[in-house]
Length: 100
Image 1: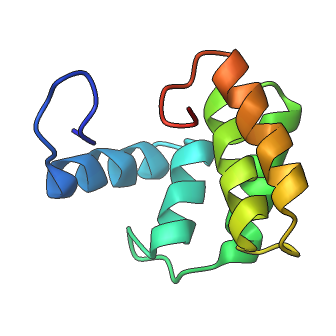
Image 2 (image 1 turned 90 degrees about the vertical axis):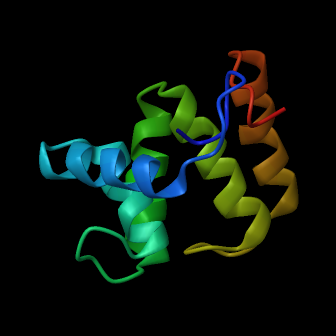
């Protein structure tokens, strides 16, 4: 759906699954919707960062990667490339392919 595992990229289908997951209560999916402005939510990097960093503190590997991405790029948080790399390395060490 998002171009992994030798699948062709289908952004609309991927987006619809993320929105559905958000509607069913997924905090991570809500973070993605806030990041992208999907599912009837306005873009809100600060709130998205808060959700991803909370998930990262609870050892969620996707949240490790997204927290690192937000730190690296300064989305919703003061830009801190060193902190970003630290979180991205944690995601990589846990096997998250995108973070590599």
